[in-house]
Image (cartoon, rainbow, N blue to C red; front, side, top):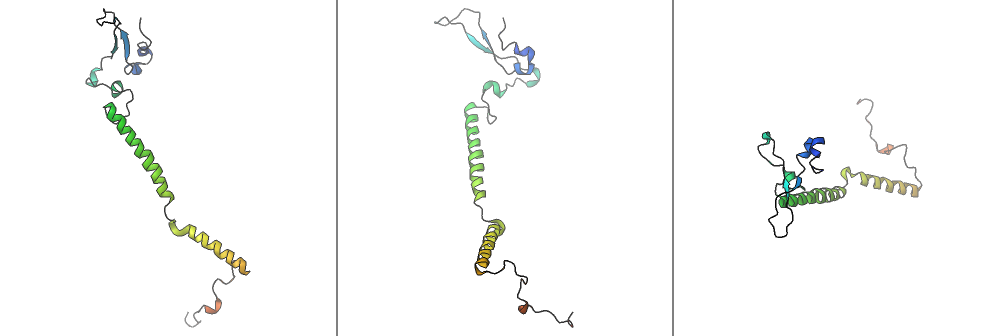
Length: 144
């Protein structure tokens, strides 16, 4: 009788090439304990793949950094540490504490200060003459 994983090949042919099939040996046990031998059987690689084995077969927790499982996990952790901690946390903190671009915050604080000062002195906020007309020197009609 076929196991449930071996029947997957009929319903999902692409998935069956990645799922290892566990089979119980029918031969006499050679060990002292007398347990039946359980082996992992891989399906034959297609003729076009040159006998290469998928990294997921060798390492089920494959992250895509290396074929060695230990180096793969180490590189994944280092990559995520620098990607999350350094780029997002330190980069976000750096952007937050950048100086006031274009002095917009300073201009608002200065405008609020001037408004409070004019209100305390009882002056209008905006005068009809922005500049003092007695100090403006206009060209004569002859010079135009």
